[in-house]
Amino acid sequence: MSYRGKEKSSSLPFEDEELSPRPNSFAPKRAGGPSFGRSVGSLNTKLLSFLLIIWILTIHYFERIVPRQTMNACQWEKWEKWDEDSNVKKQQTAPHRIALMPDPQIIDDHTYPNKSKAFNYITTLISDNYLRRNYKFMQNILDPDTTIFLGDLFDGGREWVEDDEKWFKEYQRFMGIFPSKPNRRTIMSIPGNHDIGYQEIKPKVTKRFSAFFGELNNYVEIGNHTIVMIDTISMSHPDPEISAESKLFLQNLDDQINPQLPRILLTHVPLYRFTDQQLCGPLREKGDPFPLQKGYQYQTVLDWEVSQTLLKTVDPDVIFSGDDHDYCQVKHKFNFQGIDRVAEEISAKTVSMTCGVKYPALQLLSLNNPYDPNPKSKLADDSTSSYVTEMCYLPSPYVALNSYIFLLLVTIGIVAMVYLFPASLVKLADKLPVVISKKFKHDDLPQWKPSQFPKNSEFLRSLSLERNWISFGLHVLVAITAVYSLFGFYYWYI
Image 1 (cartoon, rainbow, N blue to C red):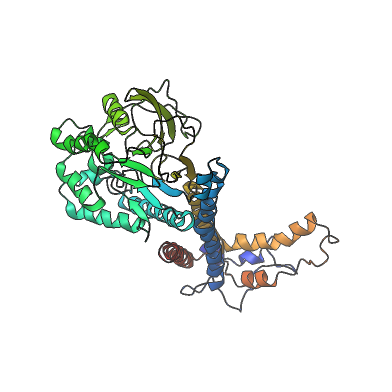
Image 2 (image 1 turned 135 degrees about the vertical axis):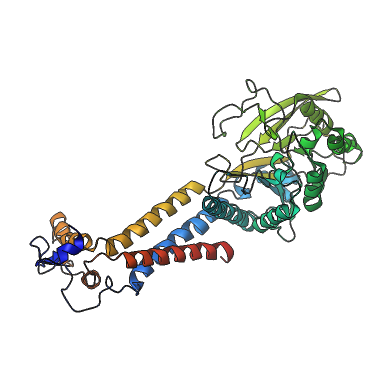
């Protein structure tokens, strides 16, 4: 029998013995007073306001308080320890601070080709917000002197060979997520395999990337260090037309840079390593060995010959790479001009939430090499390091996402209780004082009386026991629209 059929009987739901009104009952009145359930076109502003307040508090916590706390935990002074250095000059010199941003890899139509447009749209919004929010807090709180991206800026950049319009739209979107900060240096010119490809590289793609982001092979001298950035992907290509520029840059490197300054090598693809001997260390999230493999438009490490050429030519003190998305720290042994050398390589974690790691991070680098008119040779025996680095974990994206999903279900559930299951809500509220009075002694709660629920009573008595699907759908729609607008407001204005 339908519910509406029950209403035609001589007994109303609240006239049943089980639901009959008692002295302190929350059962609705039979007649008179406003009825939120029956008012099809009206909105329950008290209910919506209550839900909106809960959402504001939750969103503000995850979108503002948590990122701020996370970045404050990575403050430079907490891990640099330059003031503890025995070198007095370093204690008196301001370090040059760098934020390395590996693999943002903003998602596009090529990321999840088999998913629906609605899924891709929502995923893009969530991912872009995560990247933009963390970048904003990093720039405001950590305020690095230089920010360097380690490649894979896009996900499908290599696919838009002839579609310049599509590529430019994605470029504008990328710059909107990661705007350059005034009076600070931002370097985005290191290409990744998702930007230009790997086995198949088109000259047009590399030239377009270089035209908008800068020279693919370059160096900068900052903090009395030389940072060398190599397009190792093109350098590895068998086509001389593709690899010529990178190889020529490497051949002439010693003639261009200061031979006395420590050198740092930046590359998107990690150098070759023997995974049975060169282990990644305890900070690797996945726990498995570093993969040595290749596939469509990717290769997890550079070839052995290319890696050795880089080490013996650049002679780096430390190497930073990306591509793998997880952390890996190894040491490379090589010989430079007859001297045995060791360089540390750190493959940094991705900053993206969509690259297969639960805990994204950025890599911080602090350089402190005070000027000396009579510097020691960089090959001299000097145990004093001129750099320190730290992995800075970003806010866990899935804790916030799961909390939002849970709160959305709770929101729909509350609205459903009010408009689809009002009799159950009234019955529950009617029994609540009895449950409380049995659990607590009145001596423990001298101010409490079972009948002291004036606000709840007014609200519950105003409900209709009839299911109202129209009001349910209307309130759910208004609540979701308000939450969507709230996220947009936080994304763009706060």
